[in-house]
Image (cartoon, rainbow, N blue to C red):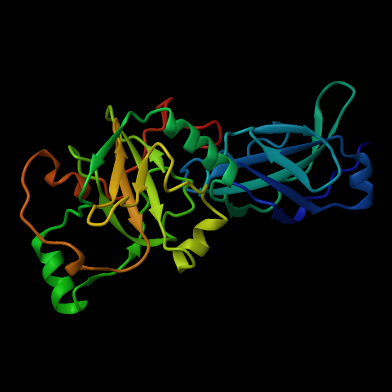
Length: 304
């Protein structure tokens, strides 16, 4: 008669990335020697039907040959970044007839996947470059807000637009979402406004502009690919060549470009004017809007 396997305990999750993790647990020496397979059951935390605790002899989700722990789990479920998951494990011994002798399910452990790594952001950057058109000259960065906003800035903030936390719009795995503060500006000549689309023909590109040595600069240096201010396909700057000339700025066509400036901006650096037209409310409609997960132009192979 086969002895029962003990229930895995002390589940530990480590080395979590946006699309992988390692898992380990405590096993008796006897079970370690006997186990031939591990069953891993993974589901999103918010799922109403997590698909756990099926019949003891029915493997769920992933059946993996027993390997030394911690075991790497990657790609099997196309893990999404910044997503909370629940995981439970069983150990199993494959019988000569092909059936499995299995342990009870372990306790359920919760964890959250991480942000996109720099290599994933480089993939997004490469895709964004492929969507840009020719560079167009422009002279004004603008920020669309209701009059009450500017009244508040004058009366309560000393006339200075202060950085606010970036919302969760755009790519779900963006390392700046909910972590980096800044003031959003647009520069496109026809549009108001991470690389993403929101079920429209145009794609959004978010550039972070951080003064050297600033808190925003220090945050971004290890998290975002750096662009050359003078030579890139999105936004360029050319200093005046002669006395009395103005600097020349150019922005990419064929994308909706948003610039997140990480330092406070005094209102007296520009002017507040009434605007009208198609672009008037677009920036207000994109708050926390998610990218289209089915778009083949702006999604990469890791989690959506």
